[in-house]
Length: 263
Image (cartoon, rainbow, N blue to C red; front, side):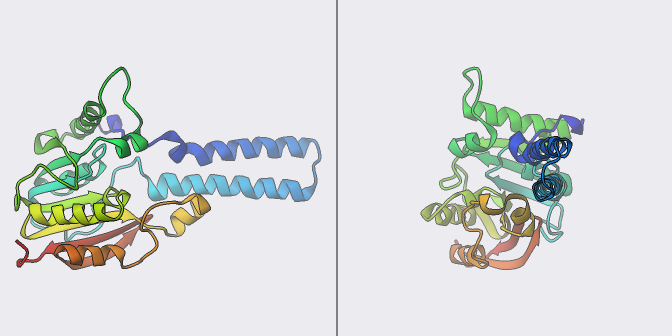
């Protein structure tokens, strides 16, 4: 059943390094047969080793197409509650919550717009991006056997079609950090609005660490990865208090709580 789950990240990210390693090894073999200089062969060999180990980092370290685990046991420790997944994409973070918190329900919200198409491709056969995104998410939920505890909602995280103070907790994984400027402020403000007082917010963003640095080097270009306190400060400005901060491979997470004084 779980083999049917596909989070849809493109093959160049998942297997590009492996293909490069194969090409480099083939060139190395050709050079060896033709007695190229030791310097050239050494460079080719080192490049092939890097490509192969970089693929292992992406595949087994970052593992974007694999199942995600909650980065902290403190999130929704009761195991029950109504959770919002802001920017759910193909459902990786939705599954993460539903599998870790057996009594929880999740509303998986995504705009299924331009950013979705950039990450998961444009729809085929005349299907709309919203229909494609909803279907892909539901397929993954159904394959994991948790679809009865989830609802898919199309909507913009900067202006969510959801009632105020209607959620016990929120998770947002690798979504809000695709926004810039006022968009970030709007999204965090909306998160605070729809949370109940005292509700929890688990924010997960891409972090530029040695994992990504080794695998992608100068190709890394992602918003807000440099400032260590950027997201904590933005959360405080939106009306949250920081409960816990930590890291996982290529990820920074912050667990925050809505202060009771925020309406």
